Length: 147
Image 1 (tube, rainbow, N blue to C red):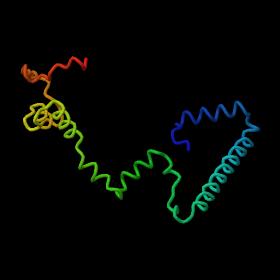
Image 2: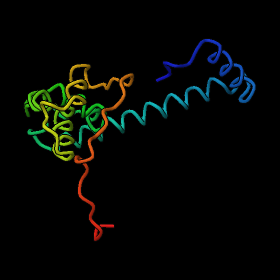
Image 3: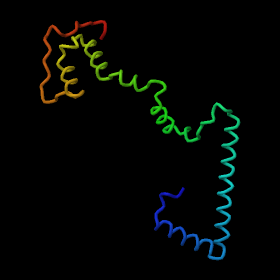
Image 4: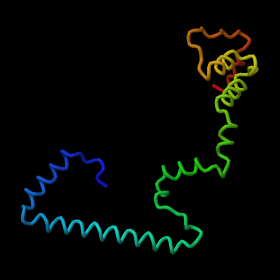
């Protein structure tokens, strides 16, 4: 609960508590605080137990920590019942995007130097080379109605 409090901070809290409550009332305040924390923990544990009983035997392995989205996603990615690893390994986004770009620009995917250099260099383009100039007949026809 207090894992991130250092020794200097702890000493400061003790001195502050002595100054605020006084040395004669401090033991009574500590007892009251510990009793309250214990009651809150008991209430929380009984509420968790009631929820587990109400959910039934299907949820006997249910952990309340799984309600944290980060924990839930990490647990589901580790558990490969759905075959997510196979789907993820079979899908190459860079290759798909290069194919779509080539199709839109009307180039042959195998002859495209940008795609081949990008795939050969791990998806990075060589920025030291000058881009190839397109021939005049490679331009799409002008459509006056589209503008």
